[in-house]
Image 1 (cartoon, one colour):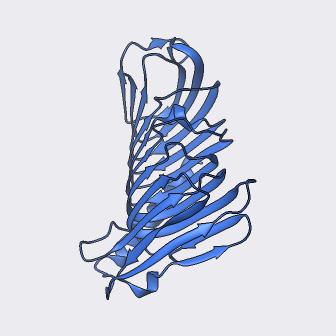
Image 2 (image 1 turned 30 degrees about the horizontal axis):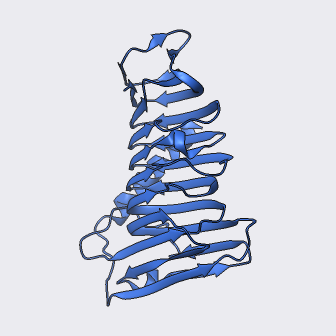
Image 3 (image 1 turned 180 degrees about the vertical axis):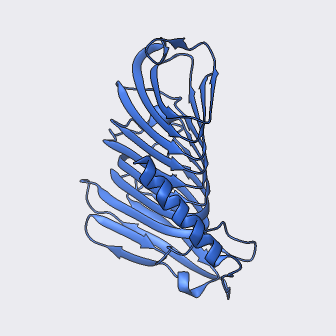
Length: 277
């Protein structure tokens, strides 16, 4: 898996070289309101596809997804596709986006999620993101991103059980905060060539496994002193910095209290920092 990720990362770097110097033509600023009602309590799937802009996402208190998209590039006009139980808001083809937006580009997405149970999928490239998912009713959450600067926060416990939380990221600066509050059964994280912080603070409701695979980047894993956790590290780290009173016991253990995180980390040519805070 790591070799596959590294191969994709190298191909992406070659693609950047080809596109260096290309500029995105801009035009008039347009605004697109979003107002999509869900009429079922069974839950819905929400998909967001965007790039080279800003994404601000919060949880709402009503049974609709609403917000505003503003941009000044006509080829990025959003399209909305929906059925009775799914909603996709898409910018279109984002495959050629390989950088954060310049000051001339406006592509601002402000989205408030429905309070219905949601399967959320985000695919985004070259964007600044602030995803505050406090009190969002997430049954699953998957995000693919690259060339981004993003923070994903769970300030309060996810009200419903999240079966899986998956992250795939390349060449990004990404911080995940309050992960114990996300209330997931399983977390899979894949990161290549970026700077990643995973903060496992919050209220853990059950024993939970976490798989982290990374290479050619910096991974910082933060665990609160009161949180029970066992961490296994394998692979070839370029540097391993251990901070705090971890007990080395067939891995690294923190006694803590209550339910336990079991974190498996596989690194290749990356820097790992493991913090007990």
